[in-house]
Image (cartoon, rainbow, N blue to C red; front, side, top):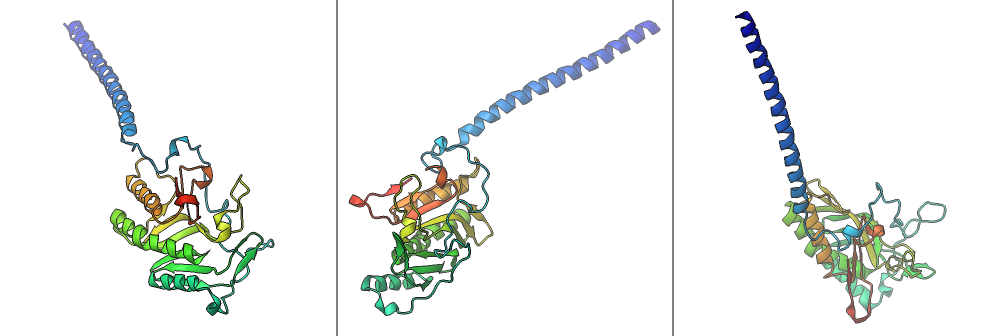
Amino acid sequence: MAAIFGASLALARLSTRARSVAVRMTTGLAITAVSACTTGDVFSLQPAVDVGSQTSAMPEAPQYSGMQRLVPSDPYLTQAAYPRMDEPLSSPEQMPASEIDCRNELKRLGVVYQDIQPIHEGQCGIDFPVKVSAIGSVEMKPAATLTCNMAATFAAWTRNELVPAARWRYFSGVRAIHQGSSYSCRKIAGEGVLSEHGKGNALDVMSIELNNGNDIDVRKPGLFAFRTRGFLNNVRADGCQYFNTVLGPGYNYDHRNHFHFDVKNRRNGYRACR
């Protein structure tokens, strides 16, 4: 009788272990199946249109920090690596009528600016440059040296498009625009043609700081950053209504971390928005 009882107990223990193994195997198969399903779901959620028309062909960028690849905004950086002070324009009454009208537009748009001395550096330069430090309550960090026309165009876009888009997407105003390059005497990489930066007609936007503390990096957003992705798509699309050139992440590797805006004049009014 004892032998029968012992055998029954052993069978019960074996049955318990077998059930445990079976449960583990079943759980493992279930996890595998769920993992496979989740992977498929993740990719199906990815929007068909990403930030930039060539994002899928863009090579993987190395880790980037700061603005070391960009020419500084200050046009007076010398080879000794220290900046010269901007000198205010002493005789603004000598400006042509078109420049005076443009400055009236800057004032209407609430632009905080200073007229500075003409810049002439070989092929580069601005006859009547302005240094913009704010557009209404939106700070420009650092202050941007531009032609008056570019400053007025950027201010109109900021007030009419950027600020409303931020309020719609993030329920917040814009505190500051962080720019990486305004006027700088340089050529377009690989082409030998003078860049619009060398004429004061271009501005590179690195990030947009909101009043709620968010700092929106212009670089390609993550897979699930749907709100940021939508906001940056608005920045690109709305910019094409104001500027003649809008280039950003997805266009090429050099524009992976900023939006380039300029007012370059082209034949037949052609605009490049990529």
